[in-house]
Length: 137
Image: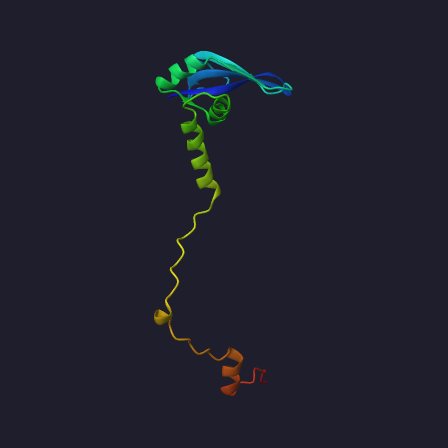
């Protein structure tokens, strides 16, 4: 399976990224098929340059953009990235929210059970049986 993703380059504390097409199973810094652009987030005005025609070509061939790259491309106006960003948003919202059981329907007044009388506490039951709770020697 092909993936279009960011490949980190640059020195320590000054990250730069290449936009590459690679096999999903390969290491992130491993071999790639083609460089499609670059992303420089550490500048005052982050730079994102890419070849939109080649990205479209690879997506038509079956390559899937990473979630981060799809978000960046969507912000630059590349069409078709909405599907990948939404896929991520749906998956994220399901994992963050705990599963809740469906709320039980409210009982109708006619179907409400009659109140149950309270049981006697254990101390009262023991006292009435003649056991005072003291040790006998």
